[in-house]
Image 1 (cartoon, rainbow, N blue to C red):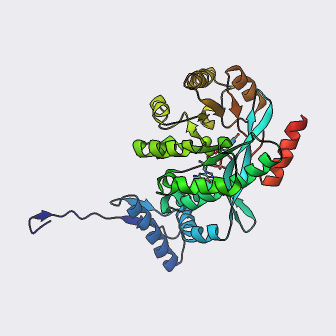
Image 2 (tube, protein in one colour):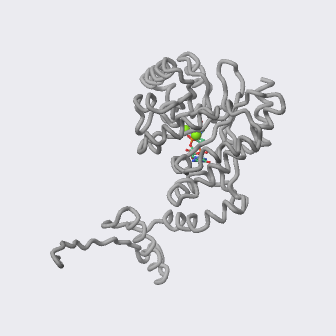
Image 3 (cartoon, rainbow, N blue to C red):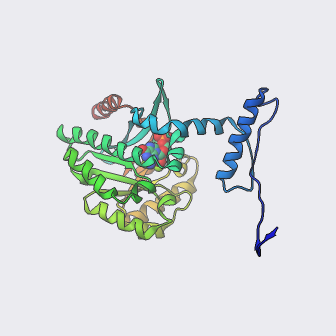
Length: 313
Ligand code: C2E
Ligand code: MG
Ligand code: MG
């Protein structure tokens, strides 16, 4: 409609809950409809969303996440990074877990929510702190080249004092930055390449290395590799998971590895689940691997056991 020479369009955000399948209680039915309606608004509005169980769980996570972090329920798990040529564990990636009433919840439950509401920054810095503490123990025990990999989201890199915070954590543990690797994902960082490149260069000036995570899916492009100041390329598990069955995947990964090496990057393949993967990846000159075949992400104590196992064998 027109008002005072302006045109106005009315749009609707609709949430649907279904009686009697989802609930027979009228108040709950309205609450579910409301939750679905808010989801519709968040998606930009002018749309229809049907309530799902996941929606209410997400809302609960959203409401409690800040307290969860404050209570120390987000903890680090560690997954080995294995050098297939030296045949030993050379480092670990820190992956966050939520310990809720003794149950271990995966990042998929809380990381997307944390990214949306912003507290991913606290999680990232917390994990970096824990990872440096963990790395320092290795370095002090004589494993002076033990590598630590930490996921760093775009929001954390965008914080104005990001470099200062990272520097502060490095100083707190007096850890050699050369063995700290920050993992970024291109879909997150490529919206603001110039700014991100500047921040990443400042981080690199501290001595830290930069790794591009989940390469080979989504936005993957060799132009990004050229633009971003990278040291390591991590090839996504989706590409790796079926290499033993698909010659073409072997060719793709082999070519990626070749190109990455020409550009001076080290290559880590994720999602290595069977020994055949290792044989193939060795042949196509992959440097390091990560995957369930070596170990799932585990608590600190179990990580030591895993390390011991691979030192003996
Ligand atoms: P990512 O950084 O790519 O981490 C690797 C994921 O692959 C981990 O999932 C790991 O458990 C899984 N994985 C490793 N080896 C195998 C394998 O052989 N087979 C299969 N099927 N999966 C394997 P996880 O721990 O569930 O983490 C998922 C994602 O959540 C991570 O992917 C990372 O992007 C994000 N994430 C986790 N912790 C943090 C954090 O502290 N900060 C940020 N920003 N992101 C995090
Ligand atoms: Mg990662
Ligand atoms: Mg990955």
